[in-house]
Length: 489
Image (cartoon, rainbow, N blue to C red; front, top):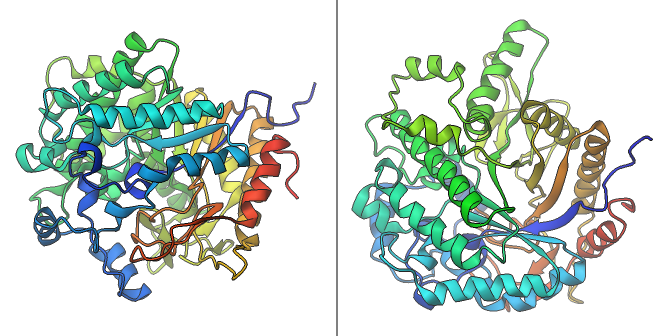
């Protein structure tokens, strides 16, 4: 019998990150996290904001100044959208939309304010018990990310962050508490968000400050080794403490095609895929470093310091599912002068056959089907699309409406290709659209780059009523969910 698309077990959802949504800076015993230090002047022009984002996302001076500053004025990730205090209202809206799974992240610094505390912050744990209980009230499953870029800043100041192997011990303590206290509420776990961000956005991924390391590549991959070990330990501990719950891996998927049929471009596409995508999932899903990375490490003079038993830990801690964020595709070529454009964490080479968003991210719905087939063929593991969505300028009308046909069109095309991938034979568990409600955008740190189906009345400086409004895409996604992806008109 020919498959027709999504089965009855498929989960429709939405995703946010605690650092971009919660706010609640220092409330409830929360410590300062690394994402709390990122700076934005809301009076900057869009060009100045993009210049900051692309060319100087984080500096040593910014780090030192932020450590001394308790204000939220220039630190939008300390404000978010006040989800910390508004989560009941927000989850009620998501339930009205029909969400079946909700992805959010847990702030390490809310559980262990300094990261190396001997005992957890009970008020922080209670917040997540309350939050996830509210999800269960609406029969929403929970996909919880343990680390979505942010770790307690004390771990960076005192120990050097992910560079120091000592952090593994603190991470183990953190995840053990998560499983013990929150395990009954969470259905799927992700130890790390977009773990390959380490290479392309070092402060986000591994808390390294660009320009502040003698051998940046060496430090990045040493940090990553420690993260790979943490991921494997999270799997091992989780299988023991919360048997039956699925624990996965996630990358930012940089889908790449050869720019031409030249053999050199095809070879470059293979290399770009290996170094940007496959390495990370290979380690976490297959349990070992792939052989192709040896040449890369040798050419960059990277020597990973490992303890005895590390490789065994990786082998015994392979994940139950794989996931990725998908926003765009790019091309691979060594042709000089090839046009480039922005895309998620990187600047990629432009595909002349694709249109771009207002931020230059190339829109490629077929690339999602391509990616799903690639990933499933390589790992033969269930897949969750952890992020996918369109960042755009939205306008709130005087009558409280937001007309966003461009977002509906984007979602419609991508969901159609998801369905095709399922018919192709891909085992797809869930789709958690990013971000289901407007939040502070991670790259530019602005509110005006909006992804949500729910509009939040706040500007780049945190000014506004904070009220929530249903966009046209809210009603469209509700209809999509009710029909299990059949009614996309």
